Image 1 (tube, one colour):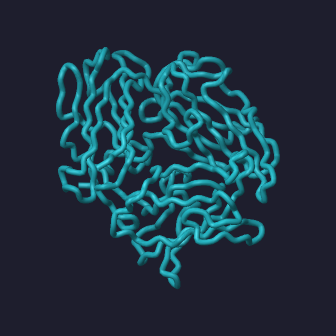
Image 2: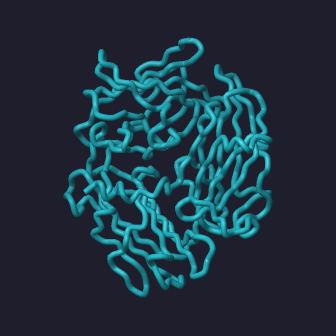
Image 3: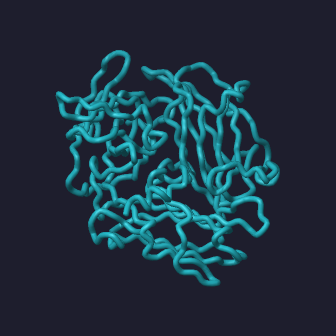
Length: 404
């Protein structure tokens, strides 16, 4: 049954961060100063998104930010004039930056909020934030972050069940959706409406444009759709480093080997049971013990991961919302025949992290297991294009967590 899910993936049709410069680390998006919330805001509300990153030097880089409005599948909205969706100015410098203080690894922390006094968005839909080095725009962006702005027009009902059409209280979860048109003038749902459902904000756990099996003049329903069955996964592992001199949560030991602090996590094993623990579904939050200035006083630490496992078919990766993609090459694990473990050493900013182990296809079945009890976050996006319209409105959004 699972190939149905994989065939429905809409090339990264979800919020995502991408870094193209090896000197940039810890790209993060916070909604209303909360880094655990999705990068989705309501049009016309007081909510804002803060984009932040570290450049690993004390040299000033003049970064220019550019917003782009996109279609539902993240292509450029080429039929639109910029003045139709952008309020204020585009291509402005990022002028909020501070150098690290009293850290062994030096860096400069940059941040930018959208909307701000110079730039705001006028329409709902998908947006890309692109950051360029001033004068080097022809080389492409150094980073890209995607976010969504929605209108609360279409009513969405989303329910999660472990009693699926392929198993019952086993290894999957099934999504049931309902959508009310409200005041939308829907003449042809097949061409006017696009839907995206994603689990834990992961591209390989994203499906789009699943046909509704119940239609009326008031809305659509998706029931008993095998396309909306997701592997349940397992709860994320987590660790925390608040003090580089003390072993924090799930850290075996802290050591200093010049020029880095090293944190060795407790070894994980291939799970055969459900992990009954609260997690944040892959989120991370840089912070220190005193939290006086997490952005500029947090150390960078080499974190050592180990998964005890027989050698598996295909590469294994450490994954979280902090890894800038499902299978970040920097997070690929090497198999150590002597220790019979997959191992990785990754430089991360001091703080709290969720992580999991995935195979190159994004699955966790052979590394973490799939268990129906797992608490997962499901986001649903509904896009609508008016007859003769030139852009895809994001007219409905829902975010629910499975608590089974």
